[in-house]
Length: 133
Ligand SMILES: [Zn+2]
Image: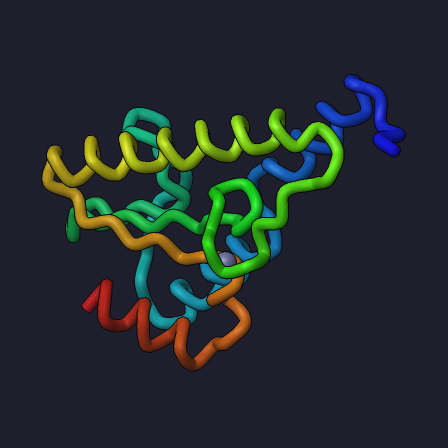
């Protein structure tokens, strides 16, 4: 049974979606320790990228697998209000695609880091090195 009220749910959702989440902090710390400097959540860029490397014209997004509909198996649609969640996630996925398109059109390189990739630090470091070098 779905026990959350609408209000409780929106509170929970805003907490889940809030900035400075675990995976994002981990990426920020790692990027910083590798000697790269960045700006955060630049509001005037499409999608407000999580990390912005202005001179390199590169941005990084750290995406939660559930919210952004990753096909890694971590995005399991809840059994209650299934249609609501499916529509919600679908609209997030579509928005992400539009955002990435707009950024690339404007000359930015975009790296998406999924929450499920963050745990393997060596792989993550290699990916970042490759993208930012
Ligand atoms: Zn994932």
